[in-house]
Image (cartoon, rainbow, N blue to C red):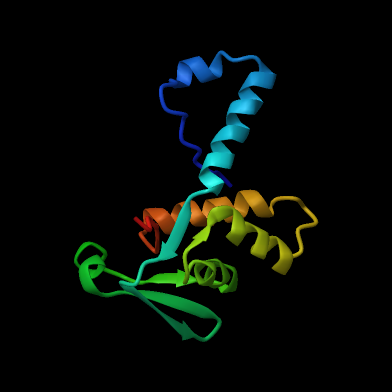
Length: 131
């Protein structure tokens, strides 16, 4: 599992890597807090179709011009995609996932963030700006 966390503005990797542990942990927390406040929305150029035990995201419109294929989602992926069928913060969607799924291992947050990163990369969800 991995989760991409962008550097804070104005800080380089070298500067962050040289921080003492408490300051480093504080920077990571600040980055996650900032990311958690971002609002996302499912991309309307994808149509989700259930097929057997999976869901297929079929690109339409503009996204079909750049993405030639379909994306297979398991039930967890579909649940996460559903969270963003209306504008929601990453934190709100994460809390819904924590309510829905048993997280005895404590890995749910990392897995959830990895899914969201993949969804963003594939443009299944996009940052929502209500301005």
